[in-house]
Image 1 (tube, rainbow, N blue to C red):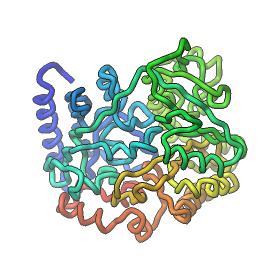
Image 2: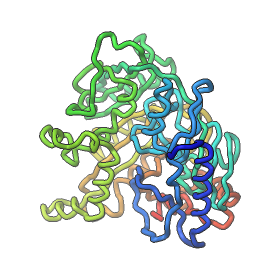
Image 3: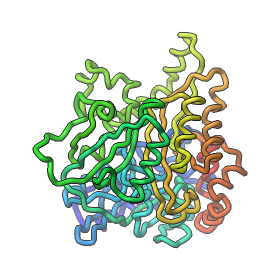
Length: 454
């Protein structure tokens, strides 16, 4: 942001946003004009100018005394952490990719290793301003219908322009333990125990996630905040070393808090391997500043635009690929069943495991509050044949997840029929809130966004 009073700058930016919304012709899609995205679902092209969010990308203020921050909706977590960490504070949940925005994580659901004790990002929002479909900026708080329906609405109810969030104090370092399991049931039982007690083997657990490499090789990574390095030199996975491989290679580790927060971003979990970025020779010449998730996302976009992988598959006589890029939540006790089914039917590894506990009911993503779920994240392609465009594996995953009492995030492709979608995501309440704040139906509905790709 430019120099001057941050609040005055913010008000000017909001005014430009409102003006840009009013300038969009009736009947044309209302979308953000932003450079980066962490969505993986295609959408119809449009020539209509997007909403001007150029001045809504920063942190307005950080208050170390109240441990709160006033943040603009399009501020990335990378910039947010840069503003809070010098005060020894971070957001309660910091999603794993640098360019996820705070507004995006709240309207689209974010998750990370502190979610087993802090829930999801929207659960530490104290109040927020939302640009609605009516072109008005509305302030809402927990308990308001707009606020409570906003998580998992993906812009169908409006866009957050400002959010006041809680922060938690953190020390300098994070000590890690990578605990191996050869049995998913024992891993699930251990997750439940850690959630209940906040510790494992007598040590406090501040962050908890896991990696399942093979059916008999699963790990929980237990993170403990600490001010002491005990003489150890913190590891650096922004250079030649690859973080996810360290999970298999060492039982303990030490990272700075900053590097811990972005440990997954450098290699987009393990997905950078698809671009050769993990090969030692390529990695030496790949600039470190370009080893990050948003760069890989742009490369993936080029592949989709020019169908590079599809062309190579056809030339080699390989079956068509289906993109299987999803995050799902299943109850912790059903995790072993889901992984067994996933291995048999999909066969994609590694997968990410991230426990979470919702603190209260949220209508548009109805997790049972107080219950432990495990997010299973898997991102790649599978050769399935000519029916790949119909999404057979994605459809099967949707059915299995909900058979097990779980839920699927909507940042990627979805294939539900309208009736099932409304039942799973409380469509009736979402529609009622939308009618109140978007009476002229300017904003695309959640079903149209997630399933119809509009």
